[in-house]
Image 1 (cartoon, rainbow, N blue to C red):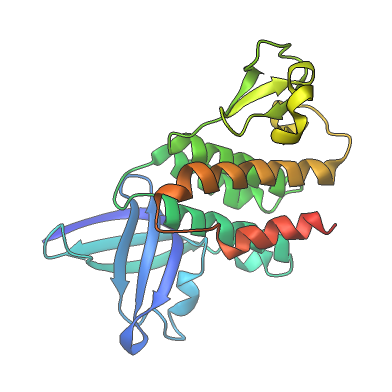
Image 2 (image 1 turned 180 degrees about the vertical axis):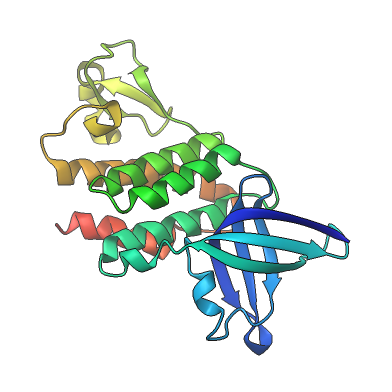
Amino acid sequence: MEGWCSEGIVIQARAHADHAAIVTLMTEDYGRHLGYVQGGMSSKKKANLELGNLVSATWSARTSDNMGAYSIEVIENNSVPLLDHFPKLLALQSACALLNQTLAEREGHPGLYHGTLALLHALNTDVWVESYIMWELALLKELGFGLDLTKCGGGGASNDLCYVSPKTALASSKEKGAPYADKLLSLPQFLLGKEDMDANQAICDGLKIGAYFLEHRVLAHTNYTSLPEPRMALYQHFLSE
């Protein structure tokens, strides 16, 4: 028999035959990991498997190649506090879906795991969407597609960064980027620790940066052809503000 015990974040739960569920957890040491939960979709157990829940899980299987089975107990329910704030719920759903779509199975990402826990807690703060955008950039970095927002890729001033190149993933100063502004992505200043003149526009710009690089650098190499629906709905929410 193979097995382990660990804490994990529920990032997917789908119904299986006879009220069972196939559950995907994001764990610190075992990464994205599937398991079978007997009766997981029953009225008694379904609430345990809400997206974003932090759970204590015991996984066991006859061999390491098998999907195996989970025994799960809830530590924190992170979705219920967001039910009255739909955009925050979209952010939670989007993060879970992106983890499920982009991570290889059973490949540990301890830094990303703790970053995701931090995001779940940040969703209850006033800077929740900024935290979500920074989480997406951390996800890109973890997957090997990190952006460099520390200096101008064209040799310009590093204290006046205003753009991001979709081609190089490097920042650009206002002076160096101005001739190509229509081809560059706007860089929100909160990502540099500064204040934005238009907070809502900055959020849209930040979400646009994450969307571009996730679609063109990450999802392009997977079986997924577009961003998760909650992620697209989150952008549309701020776009319509």
